[in-house]
Amino acid sequence: AELSELTRLSTLGLSRNSLYGTIPTHFVRLRKLRFLLLNHNKFEGTIPTLIGQLSSIWYLHLGSNQFKGTLPQQAFAPSMQDFDVSNNQLTGTIP
Image (cartoon, rainbow, N blue to C red; front, side, top):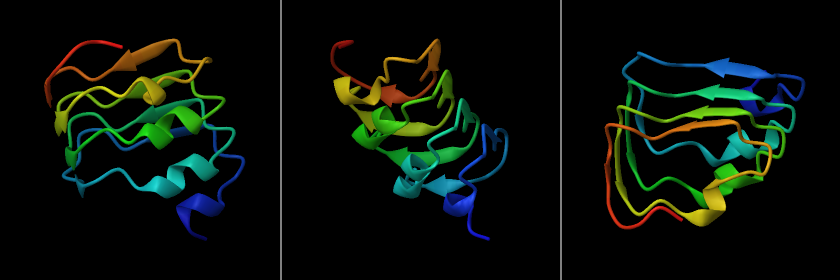
């Protein structure tokens, strides 16, 4: 099965690997995801606004990657309790 087909998945921890590229947009299909841990990798580009569509997300850790640009307001889901984007190359203001 592909990752996006694991609709009951509540935790996805992929921290401290050598994953690179952009965050896959198919993560938004994981509607029950509460913990998404992608910190300490080599992800780049901007933080996608689609992340905010993870309606059940509590913990989103994107720190220690290579993200650039501004922090989009749409990246915040109302259910979020812990949001970490430290040690990236983000600019601008905090929404």
